[in-house]
Length: 580
Figure 1 (cartoon, helix red, strand yellow):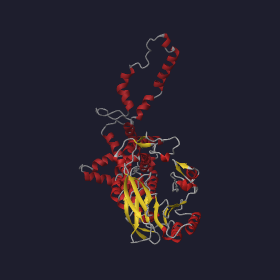
Figure 2: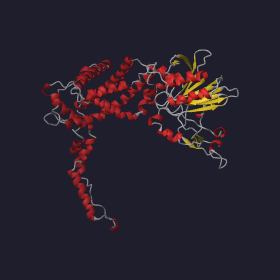
Figure 3: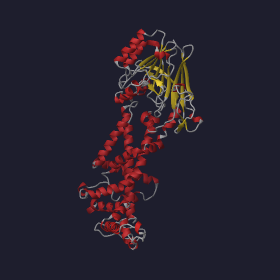
Figure 4: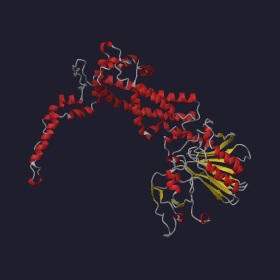
């Protein structure tokens, strides 16, 4: 009686799958153990509820937990309610978290039937009283109605566009089959509509890379790992010149494709680290592929096509940076030492020394050494002058560090990647190609073991920095392209394909109203764009000190930073359900 006489707003909340990830700990603490939430009364003490509404309407909220079904306790509660408190002409609205009527059709009924207990409750106890089913979980709005005329089956509404990222609508069919009897339903409204949803999917082509830049670390590690066993490619620049003598695009593409296939074969024939990374990536690609609405063969082929594409990108970038490294050496842009330790010819004016430090030593040291870095300080007033002994100690220490510790050489070496790559490349190839051994697309492991780990590590780190710069954007863009094609061609990856876009707009919510005749009106309201900047509403204050917030004319403390028509809510769907 006290609740019925309360004039303020009351809220009832059912938990979703994320609430169950911690065993309802947060839900129990902030919902069931509290009386108020944002000025709304919370009389709820269980994760499910039953509300008797005016004009012979009921609202039943079910907790499906992580089992996609109600437990036996809920079954008994609602069964007793239906037998003892409901009339034959009562009307029921059923609210649950997951819209299995959509997902089961999307998955083509591959898995066991969901909501077994709930559907038994609806069919055996609630019988034909259920007029409407509500659910969220999918972050969009859809409404399905039975195909059969004068059907007693309920309308099905999904309205999950309240706060999370947007989900597509075009990946789900306009016509679906529901339940064990596979009753036919047709979708009459969706937001966004199928055409808008399809267009939004193509944003993955260019926005995936920038909105998920943290994945750059993953692309860098995996793709470099797939090439780790293939460095260096000795003589690849000469092979490129010979194969592309005509300088035509067709010959260039042929060269890239054939050489990448050779490297691909080398991974599986002789690669070790590369083989591990390649197999791990292929397995991860298959595990990531959503096969809910795909045949197993299609899912395997599509995931392996993605894996092969990423491996192809990794090997093509390897080919490019190795050609670039040998181009720098062959054209004399960086001088190196030959196998007997003699310096290369520096007569060409474009040739640099073997390192930036050597360039400094040979050309600039004599000019800089005359400058007195640690000159005597100017005469200052006695009160402002440093103690002479302290100054001398600091000066002598710095002079010793500059003279004895190769700070300059170490610092310049950090920026001398071309010189380091060239010198190390020549050194490694001199060992791998000794006595005329073939070392272009196949290395002798016995010769490879003659290289010390420091040389291999130095070369891998130096050329890896250039390699990552080229491969990371290509890998991210390829993954975004794969997601876009999955969404629009195979109609799969609806969750990963749109969560990657993280679109905060396209929000929607419902308003239900029982009119004077007892019919239920459904208003679906959307906000096509949401503001990103907010400011305090100066009008948000009570008229009297004792006035509750729900009586304020402007109860919200925040309003958009600037007013705009695109922030105005609008009606996207309306329907009326006649009472029994």
